[in-house]
Length: 107
Image (cartoon, rainbow, N blue to C red; front, side, top):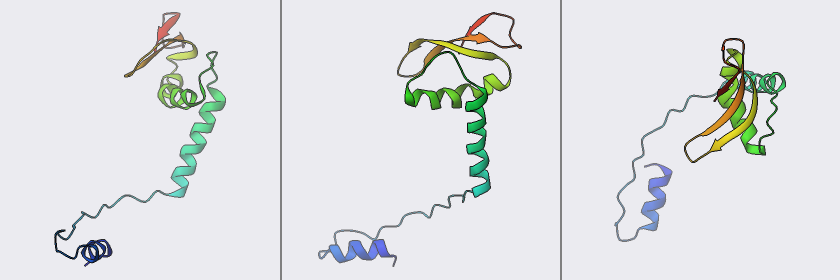
């Protein structure tokens, strides 16, 4: 009997609680080097992807995470402004990158 089941059995004098069986979760252990590389990549993106639009404190991290691929693929060069924010999505006006023939795009 595991510790949690013993705890519930000790609390239950009447036998009302059944023994609790929880599946074992085998979460993968994160390699510290992988975590460090992920952090370094984010720091590099923050240094190379600076944009005109000044986001709120928590919005900046979200923008970097969401748009860094578009920036790396040269689809966008700059985030100029927020067009619309909603519950499901936000739309930003962006200056297009080398891969796009239009001057402005929405992301």
